[in-house]
Length: 100
Image 1 (cartoon, helix red, strand yellow):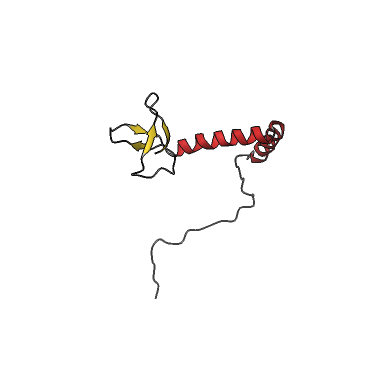
Image 2 (cartoon, one colour):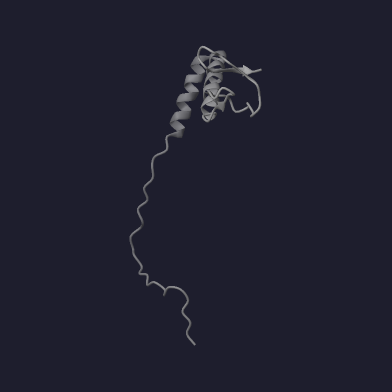
């Protein structure tokens, strides 16, 4: 009794050539080496200040959805600000200052 389920089997043939593989060259090692050299030249205090500044900017970027105030204005806030938290906003620039 012969049963066929789904598609019939495909015929394959043997090929002697090796498959060609292409991939983008990763330059992570180069970037890490450049970062190490830059940090060595800056010194510990300057490197820490830059890392803090970048961290603050990165945190602001993650909170891209922002928080909607009672007035309807949308303000960019860090991720640690929860819905319902009271915050202080600079009335001149409209930027988040701190939690109240």
